Amino acid sequence: LKAVICNAPFDLRLVEREEPVLGVGQVMMRTRRVGLCGTDFHIFAGAHPYLEYPRTMGHELAGEVIAVPDGSRFAIGQTVTINPYLACGACIACRRGKPNCCSSIKVLGVHIDGGMCELLVVPKGAVIDATGLTLDQAAMVEFLAIGAHAVARANLSEEDRVLVVGAGPIGIAAALFAKQTGAQVTLIDTRQARLDYARDRLGFERVELVDAGIAELLSARTGGDFFDCVFDATGNIAAMRAGLHYVAHGGSYVLIGVARDDLVFPDPEFHKRETTLIASRNALSADFDRVIRAIKQGSIPTAALQTHAFAAEDMPHQLPRLIEDADNVLKAIARF
Ligand SMILES: [Zn+2]
Ligand SMILES: [Zn+2]
Image (cartoon, rainbow, N blue to C red; front, side):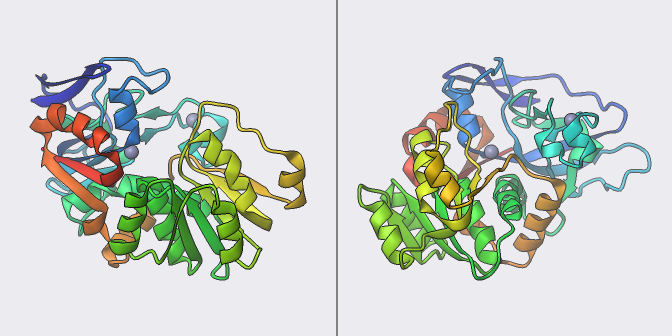
């Protein structure tokens, strides 16, 4: 079996591996598509905290079912995607129906080996029916679900004005699902290429480049009110601090991106708005279902979201190039 492993930082290899054995309650999938994201780029570049090498990356997965336990609801050959957040089922978050923030979560392709391998064995509960989606679409469900989850956390209404900071894949995912609620969405980023793509290819009319005058500009665009809800999808600590100032009085601030530094706010600014501060982590199975429905309805421009495609064998060659060309990469998908 072919697998792509990250042997050590900057050392990606195509290797041969033994066929996995199907355990109790597990499903075997033939991997057909693996989407790449910032997490993979960080693992490759040695920038992911606590990661143990060697690691088989891959958490944005699509494939076909090839073996199932007795009495399974899955059929051989069925198109599926995977919920890569394997939860313990026993901790406080799991007991409260929030396995996305399980205290001992294991994410496929991060904490444990993921799907950059021809065959993958996962617990049956991680398998999600993606019948009716193309394999490329099925590989995009996971990152879209992260955006859908953040929007669900925010509880938006159609009168809301929404600001999304960061026009990378996660910011775009949040913006797409915010738009679906009827809210008016503005996207900002430090990279003009990302904004141009969002406007020209993804249908976002309101995009603004972040520069020294951005606060004044956003104030002018909203009649001095700023935004009912601001989503941060940068994980950049300076952007996360600045984002509070774009929240309207009475508004919410949803942090999707994760930073390693302390996040500090001036309390008078935080308090006078009566800010609702919300973190959003991973996604729930309901978010995966919502994404699949939206793709089936044709309300997600999946063809435009996918900017790159290549054979998995080329991964060692392609991954460094994608990192170099990051401003022009939205979603790259490897094919097995
Ligand atoms: Zn990802
Ligand atoms: Zn748990």
